[in-house]
Length: 155
Image (cartoon, rainbow, N blue to C red):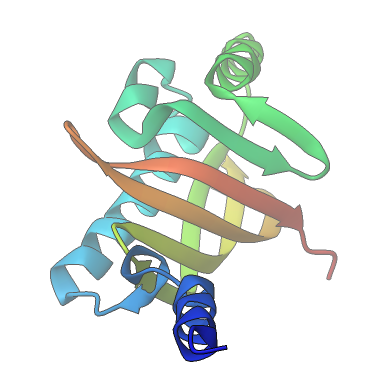
């Protein structure tokens, strides 16, 4: 009976989120790092179709949940190889509209609208719009994307 207050205190403290799981202040420099990671990944990888730059933006265990499919770095390389076989593929230009960039412990969560225009010989041939989120983590080589989620927006 005399231990009830101690037991209750232990239960309450055990249910509290740890400091590493809580929203922590993000600096303007960290926000810019997050934006640069997203923009760079889309410009170099998805528009530039340059698989040699995957490690510049992604962790080794990176995954993207792409419209119901799970893609890893190897699957992305296969996609890029297919794209490179088409010399007449349209040029892709990416435009990001950031919804939120927040830091949780050591990681950064990014939510954004990704819009792309596809042109061929300066003629617009298509547009795309995806609602996306990403998780950036610090690594010994700098910040990298560990996970992304992408959903096509029909409009």
